[in-house]
Image: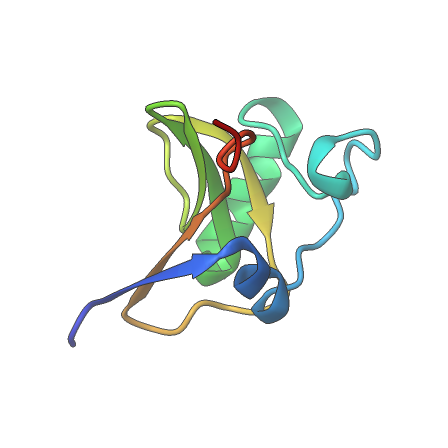
Length: 105
């Protein structure tokens, strides 16, 4: 099977994928959709990743930039999303987020 990497804007991500609400902690960031990287929230995300790995996304911070990446990752992780829709087979998606101040000079 051929592997395909896709880069989406944040707007494109929100048009294609619907994040589920964090039912464990209703006072979490990203409009109540972020799951933490520890405790009950991480355990829940791991269970989802075992059953439907293509619905799990990792929020990453690398070199001062934030990204969403399809799949369950450990390095540079800040949290997780779970979406209603699955990522296509053989596709890895990266969502590049705009930096605050990108347009400022």
